[in-house]
Length: 230
Length: 230
Image (cartoon, rainbow over all chains, first blue to last red; front, side, top):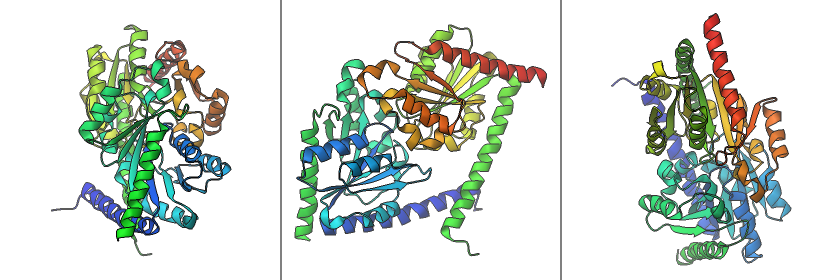
């Protein structure tokens, strides 16, 4: 078989992916060993990733110590905001890249005060497609959808809903002003990821946050439980 | 110099890009020769690409004949919807791919009744990052932003705002319910793309559509004027 251009292309992509997977596994071991829960937060631009982090910090009220890794193409807006709230935050600028990779997260983890953290939230680049293909080593992956995006997203962007452990539906306060059928949305997700934890909430009003916080605390307990029995 | 993994990777990406650019140029010549205006519509998932196409068709009231190319990871929801309105529509399923490429558009153009069209709107995959790197051959590129996404997007996703000829800001009807500073948004865009045409509008209420339609008609006249003088 002659090696055509497309054959070469596939080969290179596979090599990058498996290198990423190896690094993701290392990140995971590092986090597990320290009893830190990391969450890979994925969403469309503007779905409310940073707002959810802010709300989570406020609602935790110091009960858990949180750090953040902020992925953006450019700028330090989100990291600045979180730092101003006293949260240790590292900004990763991808310089145009459409997703975070495990190596970037490794470098960011090394810059966080891990000895003083329980929870690290990794805010991926706002993108409903590419981040799903790159493991970061976080023990939990979460998608934030939002009401203004429409209830058809699971049908159009199925890949990102697979392999996550929780789905947040943000901006529930806008439901009265938009045509969004929560049942249709959930049916679309259920086909892709049956039984995934589902948290409709509003970062604006705070409604629905309690269930999300309980889920985070349970996930942290599981990580620590595994460490205890390892 | 030894060729490492990262060197090989860059080489392959460049090869793909230039092949895409050549095909995009061919698409452009095909469109120009027929006096058809094509618009590459880029946006986050759920910003309102399909809604803008529907509204545009309704408002044109048959004045211009419109066809559509719908890019999605999966499904035929958007193409079905447009077809039900009598619009010739071709669905491209990227099968997980995060953007359209010129070759996909070429194949879709061949399936549209070009002899009976004035305008082809290409709805790119919902993604504020990757589509900006791939020319399709459309004479105009447009980004749709939307109020619920937040006014900070130009600062975080700068690349997509460069090299476009128009920016639509959709869901203006939601402005009373959200914190969105239109001036901050525009300042962010102006730095990246000074003087870009700006159309704040609402696909829900129809407010602001007239200026967008006038811009489309002017662009079509320019394409036809160039053909007349060629």
